[in-house]
Length: 250
Image (cartoon, rainbow, N blue to C red):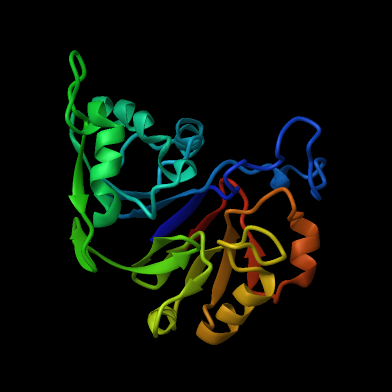
């Protein structure tokens, strides 16, 4: 299984804007981050998690022209606003692409993007919305999911084999963190060093890592407050900040 980090930036990307560099060294290209999405490839199957506003460019750089399914973590625009970019993928492959939504947001997203899911005037639908369940299969690939907290809303963690993706984490419910033990790779959100009302800070995320002990952890959803080299200096040897375009095989 190959996992490609399409984008690993927070909702604004990194840097924030022209000459608004936060704490990053703009001479380091790894500090330039588009909004967060990830592509999982297993055999001939491509599974996309979230459709970032930067999706078209991300898929172009990944040389990806086919998506078999899209999994959505939550409804925030930095995770769904690239939905219209799936139209080209649908046209190229002449197929309707399934989109798996948490039940709590399926109707809202479908209504916001009516032309995508229902068609509108001259537009034919090019995706179909499906309610997430805790365990399901995509082309014989087993996907597990559960909710974690993101401030005032919940977000989905997705687990495929020994890989898991948990963006926009504030905390986990009940014993759900135990479901992430024995991972080969965990991609987890780290917005900034200090805690945020909707995001865990560095120390809390490191505590999660020390508890579940994945072989490798990669941070995503990072703001321009996190410089790659500075963050690396604080991380254990098997923990890394993500880089747009980074690929890992497990």
